[in-house]
Length: 67
Image (cartoon, rainbow, N blue to C red; front, top):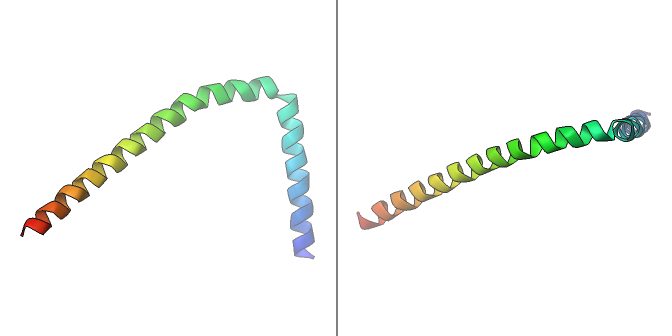
């Protein structure tokens, strides 16, 4: 019974979300336009941190090979 209940609740929540999206489309687009630059900034910071970490690991492995 729990499986069916979760499917029904999931469908109801999805329909409510779709209804809300249609009703507040302009507000959704405003939030989306405001969040895209923030996501790009955070994604860029994460990419820089990952690149620096990879460079450090590469330099450390080269130092180990020389020993």
